[in-house]
Amino acid sequence: MVLYELLIEDLTTLGHMGSSSTLKERKMFLDPNDARKYAEKDYEEGIKWTALGKGSWTSGDLSYVMYTIQSREVN
Image (tube, rainbow, N blue to C red; front, side, top):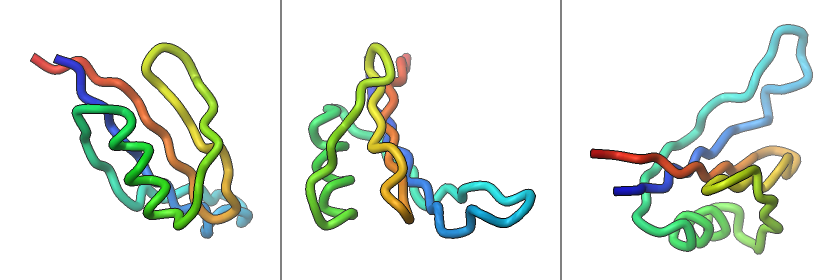
């Protein structure tokens, strides 16, 4: 079975030496379209998704947040 994991990264802490993004939320979905809808509701507007490869998409840097969807094979 394939699930789709949505990662929501907080980018507001970037820019300082040694800083990195912070994982704000992680959610699993049965359908990648549901993950996209959830991200767009969280962002409060549409997102132009970029394919990263089979079963993976990213929003790219949206100034303060970034969304990534990855397929996960589960048994």
